[in-house]
Image (cartoon, rainbow, N blue to C red; front, top):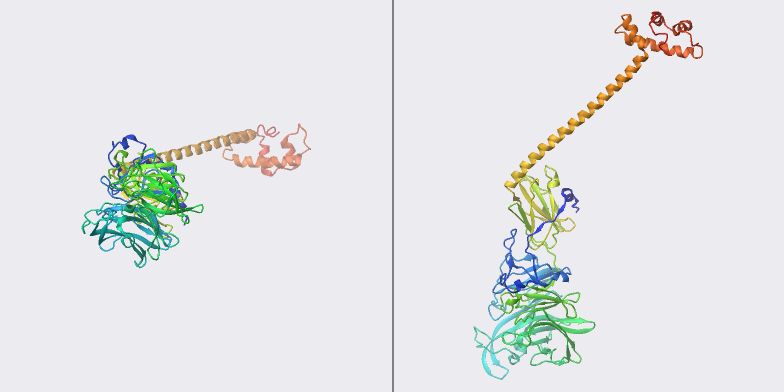
Length: 637
């Protein structure tokens, strides 16, 4: 529906103050920890949003603005675990106000053609993976497939014989790495795979611990699963230092990249098949070639192969069974080495986003590996401490209309407005009203009614103000002299002026009283101005009337000069009061006399004689002429 009616209330689009704390840009004091181990900000309009970091951009993400958002889930010794969405300036778009325990893997996934935010929340206190009862979903994997099924990772304890790489044999407990493909409609497991059924624990690079039931040995550590178009699965097992390709029907291992039982000839001198602690493996097809991509940590808790973690793209020839390093991506400005966690995401336009997992950082690279943008959520001097972690840092397009209302707070003559999670707000319409005033309504894109509370003010509706949205929280100071009623609301508008939602009302208290007094003064001024205008109009009309009188008098005087005989005769013969009658007689006679005598009068003839001779006068007229009023003979020439 049309919402052009809103525009009738607008006077100007005003620039507000940004309430958000502005992001840092290559700030050395930030990186030195001078501002703290985790710099966060709070918002007056939404005090529940408390854990949003103030980002330090070394290379601003505004240079990588493709319209998508940054999706992170910070946690750690310094950070409260919170899934959140940031824009490219670092301002929050959404931050969860609920607590889920530890949070992992915030991302956008499609189910039945509808986009959803998904993440894992729970207890990760045991061995770097989730725990629960039964075969509960683990924190590492929850992926919705194109077929509408879900891939989930599971860790379950198992009592078995333990074989280290040196052949030591004894019974003990392990964490068996499992994944399932589930029917999301029914919850039924379509496919289930157990690492210990297909891969002996002797392939593990992890040192054997006590392997008790209370402290099982994590021999495999599955951390990613992906299903390809053939129906097979690509998995990453961190402690096997390998990517493994699994038959989707039998569960058999078809091939393995890296690890003790590597299947490929390395054409890059070991750089394509040697990696450590890797995460987030995916297939990539480009120009008819097959690649695997992953985040190469180059480290785990006990080992390291390099001084920094890298995004890695490996070209595979599945016929010749060769592997070649295509690109290794890394931040040359700061060597970030993450001993756990991490992500590798290929964007639709070819750029690559790396999340540094154990360290609060993410970066974007060109397709050929050039660093374009990077952001730190913690001081670089605290990298490696685990103070701020985010398992995967990703980018997605996202559109959201929250079911909550926009938030509005009035504090010290300033309005603070926000709407946690709303992506489409472009401006705020501020309207004032009385407490008993009814509301009007409009509908949103889903034809749901929205209360707008925009009944026009009894005063000039110019008091309604449109404010450009800025950041998460928009701040607007009420200017002195602005006429406002007792209550205010804000209406969130999109870029086309469509109303999206309305806040609850806030009372502006004493400011409204001051404004009411200002209104009274203004109304009195307008009344005086109106009276002054009226007086000027009356004076103008009076002036015109005076000029008219003068004109009439002058005209009348001229006529009287021409008929001087009337006035003189009347006064001389005592005919006062009969001037009009005599004037009419003479005028009548005069007209007939001129008409009859045209061309027959000599210059010396007397007008009275001529009139009598021609029989032009009535008896009364003749009597008047006979009076011989002085000047009558020469009065009309």
